[in-house]
Amino acid sequence: MQHLLNITDLSTQDIDRLIATAEDIMQNPEKYRDACRYKKLATLFFEPSTRTRLSFESAMMELGGNVLGFSEANSSSTAKGESVGDTVRTVSCYADIIAMRHPKEGAPYAAIQTAQVPVINAGDGGHNHPTQTLTDLLTIHRERGSLENFTIGLCGDLKFGRTVHSLVAALSRYQGVKMVFISPPELRIPDYIITNVLEPAGISYVQTESLEEAMPQLDILYVTRVQRERFFNEADYIRLKDTYIVDPDKLIHAKSSLVIMHPLPRVNEITPEVDQDPRARYFQQVAYGKYIRMALILDMLGIHL
Image (cartoon, rainbow, N blue to C red):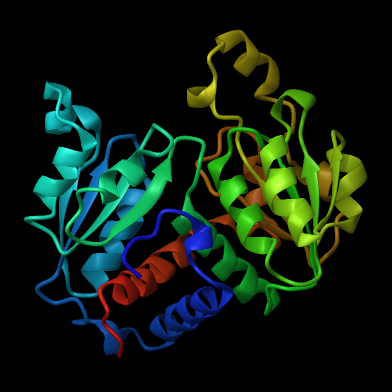
């Protein structure tokens, strides 16, 4: 593939191939140790990030490659007024592949107009986050053995949550997936996702404000934080930020096989006590992110072992 901007740029066959490669990397790390020797990844992060940026950098280093880039807009010539297009065209002269995060929706589409190397969207505003979705899909596959026939509850900020939007788009292509959207009315899943994604795919879904009522039927609970940076009104953020807090009491009626996921960072929506629950898989989810990004970098650079 030339670029990855949206999870729907990948077919289910592409996703299966990436998952298979990631699992092979986990089992045979030495085989991939020098796969990207002399290759360079540029991480252009116009928005703060911990997991995604470091995951990409760690992935490239474990493949034997090198990394360059910046971690905030003020560290780049954007602070002088340079356009995203010019920045990407310039960096294309130095790197073999680019991972880019930007606070504005659609910025990666501007980037690929001038890019001379493959571009990976590492998150654009509240729009898409395809590599987090690949991480989520690998986690589900590892924990359940399949991407079919389960009920997933998506809880929290479903309006601005780009991880949720991308995951819904991906899972809508698999058989037997049922979705439960758990949020306050102000943060419901956008109508365009229901109209353009869920209904055409015939996905079974319900919307509810009650986590307690939804919990017993869930095979997967995907928790998201209420994102202060997406709000225009601080008062609205303060009013909604503590709507859902997952603690041991909330899990009393959950399935013993439940998989608890979170794209992180968390604030207080999952209490630290839950970390000891064997059903909590969000830190393992972080680890899986490195391996799926390794698989993606190899695929986009056309390196097949």
